[in-house]
Amino acid sequence: MIKKWKKNSSKYLLENKIFKMREDSVTSPKLGTDHNVWVMEVPTWVNIIPITPQQEVVMVNQYRFGSEKASLEIPGGMADFGEDPKEAAIRELKEETGFEGNKVIEIGRVESNPAIMSNHTYTYLVLDCEKSSNQDLDGTEDIEIIFKKINEIPSLIKNREIEHALVISAFYFYNLYLQN
Image (cartoon, rainbow, N blue to C red; front, top):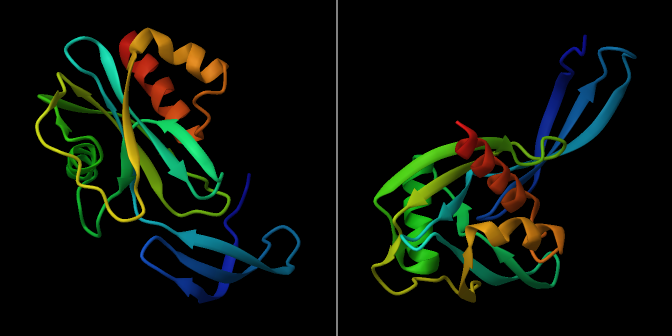
């Protein structure tokens, strides 16, 4: 059985509006040796699969600084401090796309990257999405809205047109939802 590692101390190395980088001194329960590990404290993330009455997914194509290229994704973002993930999903969908839906269903939750991150990503399915306003983007967002039929998604993943791991996991949750 894997035992919990003892945390001896923690210190913050970096803090910004997206995350805090923490260095922990820990002791291995198996070997008794001390090690430094690094953890990113990140707010809750949300991903939204918005589906229109025409059975199209409202997708976003946006530039990503990590990969230095455009990425075909579903709308998503960070929950504000203390914000309910469902409310964050509704807000992010409207900000990024200008769309709103009639029904919002939580269909999944994952640990974003438990090796180095402290947060979870929730996936919401939003049905009967219709355009209700203009996008409300921040200065680092440049988002193009693209519509894809839901049955096109598997080939977009297979052909590497969708590569974002959390987006792919969201569509996996969507398939599980359909099976129930």
